[in-house]
Image 1 (tube, rainbow, N blue to C red):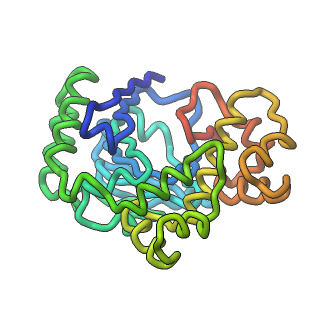
Image 2 (image 1 turned 90 degrees about the horizontal axis):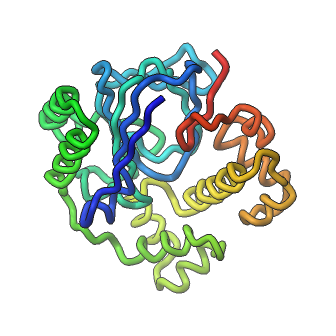
Image 3 (image 1 turned 30 degrees about the vertical axis):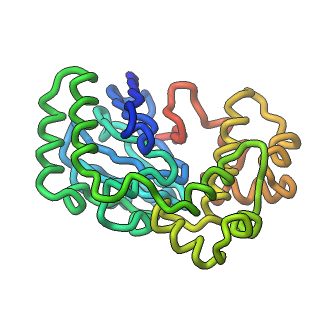
Amino acid sequence: MHYVSHAPSRPLGLFVERLWLFSDAPPHGWERIVPSGTVELVINLQEDEIRIYDSSQSQCCRRFSGAVVSGPYSKCFVIDTREHASIIGAHFRAGGAFPFFVMPVSEFADTHVELETLWGPSAVELRERLCAARTPAERFSLLEKALMSHLFGPLEGHYAVRFALGAFTSIEAHPSIGQVTEKIGLSQRRLIQVFKKEVGIPPKLFCRVRRFQRALALMRQNATPNWAHIAPQCGYVDQPHFIHDFRSFSGLTPTEYVRQRSERVLENHVPLAD
């Protein structure tokens, strides 16, 4: 498995955390991808198709063309790594995808959308040029230029969304939505409206996903995680609350996740037995 990433410079870097390139399928065939609260642009360089499998019914899949936008999910989905042996993408920051697409990001929630639907024929041309390129640097340059040429919206989002994202992603504090709206001066209904438009999911769900992601980060630091410490550290009321949310997002208990994870798997990917 070979993985290369590139952090784009400003202004693109304000919205895209990294561009990434993955080649060579890992030894296992299937991977479960868990929610991150963010949007991903994914382009398959091996074949002009991307197949997304249901986590509970691996025989059922949704078929898309080879370039898609993966929206913020509230549950996991499954991919066959053998179908993704050569793939490139852009990982948007939380709330960073909205300037690049005419549609509100909420339209991408819990689904994949073909890039051609959003960008027209230029999406097909981009994939063809990426397939023809030979080096990671050349491919990253092509993808950067394509993103910069598709800035449909303003570079600055709604002030309330920026403030809320800063508060919700803070490691030190776990503010409630009510506390955030009080400081912003908006009603909760209005905050939900503008937040979904730019981030894709409601603030409450985003906070749950971020809490889950914090738990994953702590679990990766230790081969034998201490559940009694992780749950309160991430803002869970108790261990049953932690286990319930973890299973809701990953389809696994925390113990099952630790048993199935692998150092050779990408972030938010969990190997499954064939």
